[in-house]
Image (cartoon, rainbow, N blue to C red; front, side, top):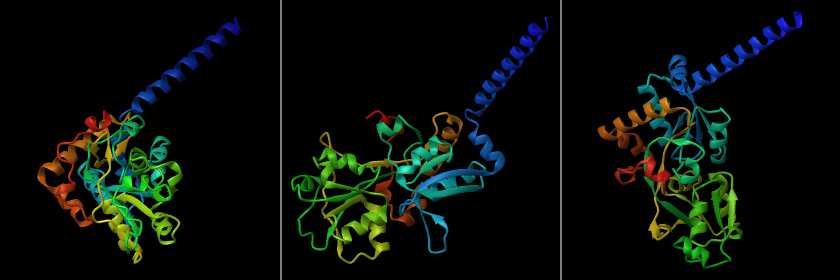
Length: 290
């Protein structure tokens, strides 16, 4: 009889614990926004890439993505944005591991990434750029030019969309040197380890200016890459955990207000973006389904 009573007690406790656990899990779904509002703080992971996210000469975190996120979260009643600069390749793993509530800065919406994270609506559109040794001795004006010369080496940042663009143009893996960040990209070209480097236009412009690279030229007549016969432009956005539907909806709502009022352009202008770099009518849904 005692054994039966003990069994009933243990079974009941296990059931209650399981029920509590299930409730806690359910409560956690979509609760990031509520928690952030209550605490007045949200944690955001940024790729350390000028002009998207970087520290200025005074040590202040700023950049196109930083200021958009900062503006939106303040409108949502979240005064403090705990931003952390990390390597681009660490953004999605950090979000999945719970290190960040949101990730952003130079991250394009792509079908593959849409399988891992939930993107907000696009915040900007941007084209690619190419830099070479001064005078462009190898006469490189496109990714196809790189593919057509197997001796050419090009450096590209780990995890960047440019890797896909290069492969689509026929550039072999053996021609690519994968680097960890933008400074490593610049130094690989300056040292002569590679013949070219590629990244988005605003990023390259900012990187060359910061590095004061006198022996590097940006290819002004660079031909934008094509995939399946269409010229590609990247559309960047913030990304969230798929379960944070409430946060995503709220973020998108404030972003739409910035677009409609024209404030979005005013926020990104100081970082080298123009009206041509606005996302227009492009949507996350269409970009994820391409």
